[in-house]
Image (cartoon, rainbow, N blue to C red; front, side, top):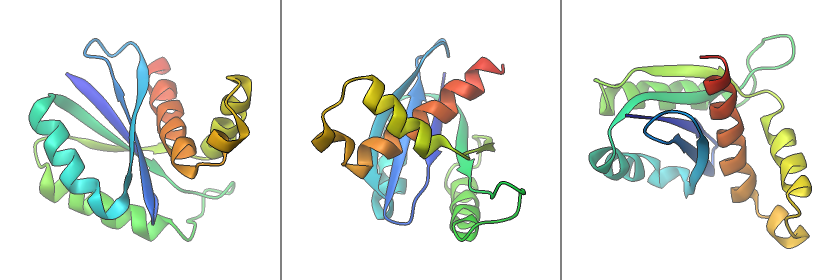
Amino acid sequence: MRIICIDYGAKRTGIATTDPLKIIATALATVETKELFSFLKKYISQEPVELILIGAPVNLDDSATHATPLVQQAIKRLQKEFPLIPIQTVDERYTSKLASQAMVQMGMKKKDRQQKGNIDQIAATIMLQEYLQHL
């Protein structure tokens, strides 16, 4: 079974997944947020998922950000749509910055680095890989 991780945003959402053995995190997709739940329903119908991680947006002092209510609403909907799959939050601080740095280190062209969807996917992958390392 796989674990998926969601970097939830108001416009776009990055999604990463593990391999079935939960060894490697891989970018899966960036979808328009309004299409997220239909994407997840289709994916979960094809691949067994044992856990959904979602990035929790918090400030350095652990206070809520402007995006926190959006993520909390998404969590409630995830719980409703997928009641048999546990949902867990993970710290998403610095993941977008780390994703940008990773794209530079990978030699990604500037044009590709400017596509925010790439950042969202890589941020989700970073969160998921960090989670796997702590297991």
